[in-house]
Length: 108
Image (tube, rainbow, N blue to C red; front, side):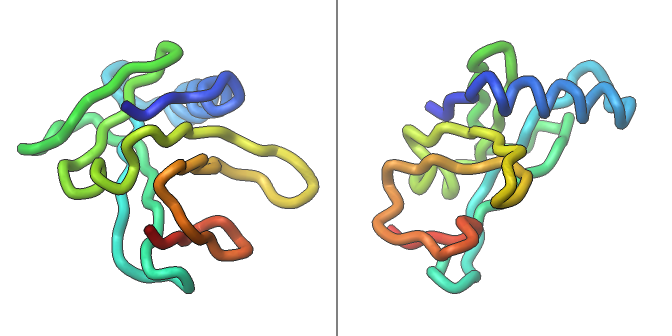
């Protein structure tokens, strides 16, 4: 399961509304190879399910993960920070054994 914090819910909901996304829009999260730690997070808005996708709903937000990425992301919380150290979505991933300084890549 992927969970969504209140801050992430609020920011995602506002972005979907501000960008006039369709009502069936969800957050698609995934993992690709790359970055300084070996794996990088991906996050985008989407409204088309693909074969093998897993759909979760938490805190009123729908999150979709492909099968391969789910293995790396199970138990992750999607959060949002608007602080002085940078704005953006944050992955609080209990599976990551190491993360880079910017928080955009990790290893397991």
